[in-house]
Length: 368
Ligand SMILES: [Zn+2]
Ligand SMILES: [Zn+2]
Image (cartoon, rainbow, N blue to C red; front, side):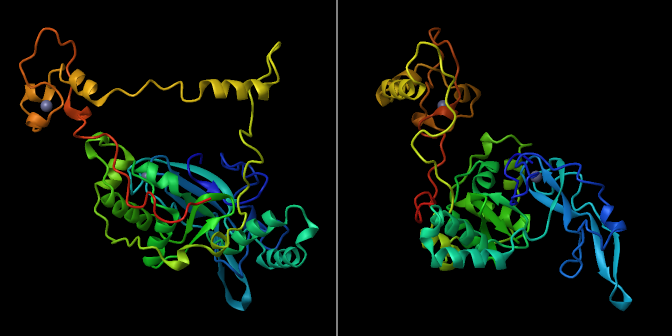
């Protein structure tokens, strides 16, 4: 539950980084359908209000497992029964790794939109009433845009880091989901959140299409890595990353203050105060100025670097597999006793390590 998967709730037990255990037996609701426990909401949902979550440890894909089922019976009564499951196979269908189990978590709407609307209205009509009016309007506006029936979300960075590709802009990913016919929203809990009703297979297809625009080097991936497994499957969906107008949420277009920013520069935990030193803040500021740009080694002159690399014999050439010929940055002459190490061509400047910046690297207005 630690990477990527967060619950979009404000419950005291959500903890952000650990499943919420021990809030009663799973089947408590089966015995007390009309009781105060409130596990069931039969008029709105055929499921229990709580669910367990299976999350893949490799790619972060998650699936909810409802704790029980509710179905209509004769006479307007509601019949409760055990849920079927599990929703996943022992191994993740996308990357082949195992699942972690978390929960139970709240799987029903978390916001009372009627209440949210009334607060928004009250704050808008009298903005000077609270010092934090701007933030209240921002956060509540995001809340009104949030998909009410999707409890969990993915994050943009987690999706791209799983397959080691560059990150599409939020608008590009949102547009691709909308073009594919699914709904998508932010979460008030995270500015990189992707809440969607699209199944995980669609999300990964979109990421596969994105990877085709800025390819990842397959030879750098272990064959058992989630990235390799996901990318070795051809996408069935042709993703369209053309930005749509409705991909930009209204709260973002209006530039509302949606996510809390640090109140001042360098805000956050500081090192322990040491006896005899100046006040911590001052000392740190001084050190920061002193060390600015000093820690990195100066960049090597390209000509010097090329000359240095030419002193190493090419390992691939020795094996007869180097196809770079004169372009190879290593020596293709027979090894001299001087050379101390052998090198492969993988670090050649002609085959740069970094992926080229994706087409979306600078597209769209910055996300705040
Ligand atoms: Zn997986
Ligand atoms: Zn070579």
